[in-house]
Image (cartoon, rainbow, N blue to C red; front, side, top):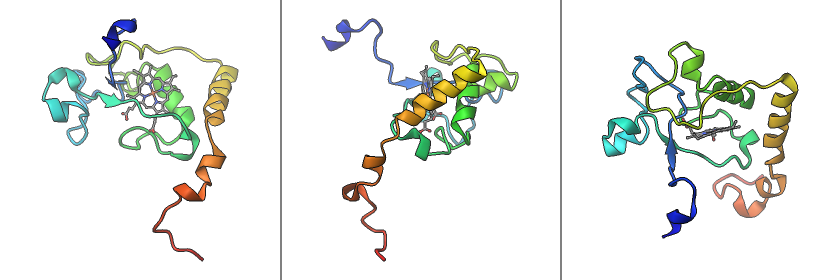
Length: 137
Ligand code: HEM
């Protein structure tokens, strides 16, 4: 089977510790991610990782648009999740891949430059993918 060729079983939904409203890893009642569909407690706050292609032109970020800039997205991950930055600590459902890290100012600029490099102006301005309902001048 295909999954036998990978080191880790594919986990398509992740909890990045964006919220922890009660110290037990709970996300706001309006947006609880995969849990809303499965009813499983461990699916709290788990969302699909979106593509980073053209990420510079799609602010604000995250499922609820609660992060305004890519610089603040990096702050979220550097803190091991925004909830940790707000003092609630790691959530019980938080992905093991979101552990926090430190970046120098230069390293942060380098990551932002990398994300910028994923912008594809040719695709973005291709008339074939333009809004068919936009009024033409
Ligand atoms: C430093 C490395 C990372 C960068 C620069 C990064 C960047 C981003 C950005 C820009 C978004 C917002 C996308 C959007 O709103 O369209 C995002 C969302 C997301 N990323 Fe990451 N990411 C990183 C690491 C990770 C890791 C390690 C995971 C796996 C656990 C992950 C899983 C997700 C998920 C599930 C979302 C959606 C979260 C939500 O909507 O609440 N990311 N990431």
